[in-house]
Image (tube, rainbow, N blue to C red; front, top):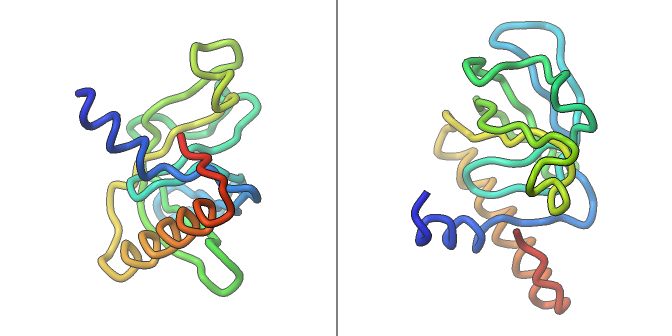
Length: 134
């Protein structure tokens, strides 16, 4: 990843004070896994997951994902796992163990909702003097 892209990513990744509920399922499956994230951006998020080796999806899996941004504001999109951070891995001291997920398909209306949420939360953090981003 180029240094410029890495810097852009750091500018828009939001670390939330309170976790968001994330539901994940295989395409068309009835079984959903309920997880949480505090780390979200325009292009993906990082799931808090104590034992990433037990995550029930592979890098080839396309997942159906629902995130409850706020009460009454739930979004749906498709994503893929892009990285597992195991306990003791470099970087785990920053994020903790977990799973990085990239958004691969999202309609325009949903993308706008996500952007508005992230932008508003970033503005709130800056107004409160907290600029906690990754």
